Image (cartoon, rainbow, N blue to C red; front, side, top):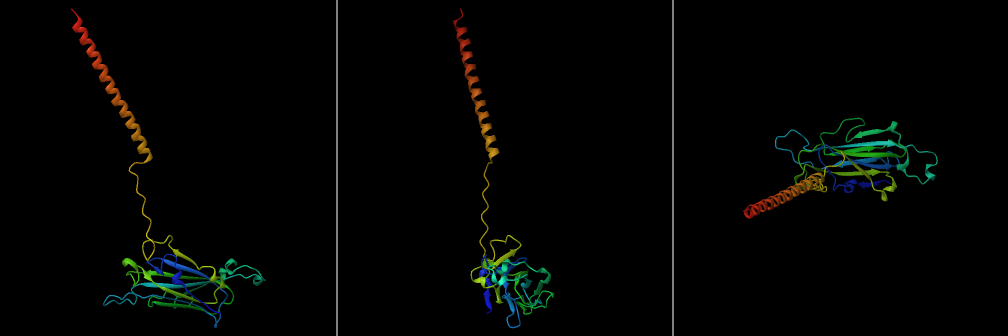
Length: 241
């Protein structure tokens, strides 16, 4: 039976939302595709309303790309305890499909709903589903604090690996590390306060203070000795006939 996965809730940095220049990639494994059991991926988002008089169809533009990489299945694989993610990849038969386009076509620049359907690849495969932010110039409804972020929903259906029930979907974001403090993500940690003086500065201050104390002590001793000598000669002058 086909499985349905609502991937947006699995986004590790908050809800499904990205900012311009970012790409989120979800990796799943399937047992195969057919006309009766296709791999179907749908990505959609609510685009902000365009300014009056604008000719652009989309304000924000997200792109969907699906890459299917067949797996090399050895004889007797079904009798082992190995899982699909342990099989080697056959990248010579890799297929890349853009949302709403035929294989090898360009990105869709006109629609906020993009779909990919694959129904002619028999055998297990690794599937990488990527959502990229080609353009985000206005924060979408649901983005926090007016951030330039676009929320999205992503649904994957097909003969997905049953291990999904116990193994979470692998999610990666590019560029890495992700920008924090936006799109509902945790704020960046506060920068540590710089010490007023470093170790070397403290050592120099201590030496200076020591030298200064010695100088002050020397001055005091010299002053006392000078006064004592002056008092002695004054007494000698007084005692002389």
